[in-house]
Length: 250
Image (tube, rainbow, N blue to C red; front, side, top):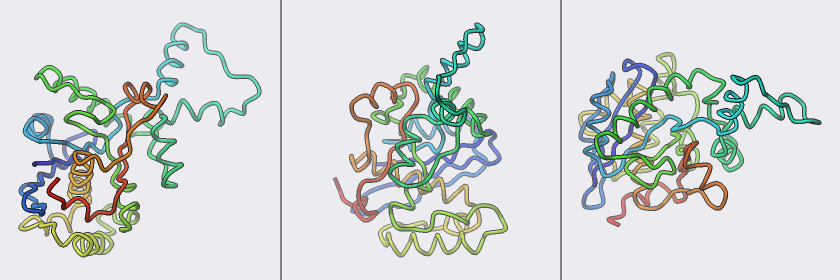
């Protein structure tokens, strides 16, 4: 099995892609690219068994409805609710609210934060994959699954905050140490220095690990009414087992 992790930013300069090859109960990092353009991302997904993308795969349905109504001049505000309360469902997808309830972490709002720029890029990538015969199930059941590295790290008992940006290289190195201690079957090989120097690279590796968890069925999936909403909004797959379960040959 080959899993790919994509730490997607609005532009190539802050985008990283990692490839993990799985065999004999080990995960081996065989390639990492920082500064990944669209062509490389599409190539990576097309060649992978499963790809984990750290980026929203869609916008909140209620936000889309709100903008459509605003364009026509027919916005209606729910009665009896404070502004912040009724805006919550415009800013956060169902999956974002589920992640918060289960982990205490709140993903960035795709409709009210700069991550919307990355999601625009992601939408174009999904369209290109569909044109190439690999349409994406935004619920995570196909070639691509939406992932959230911070939530994965927290669920696996690893440091999940404070390692971003050049000023925090010490914390980034500590995260790499803890990850390798928790997953002795993970081989970073010649790419270990890059993972210790670039938070984009290590987030891509974590995304590839999350893709492995998804491929093995070891993540949360939408249930009931969540399933219909996740088809359009996307669904963040959270690990449901300890990290060492990824080394199974299943």
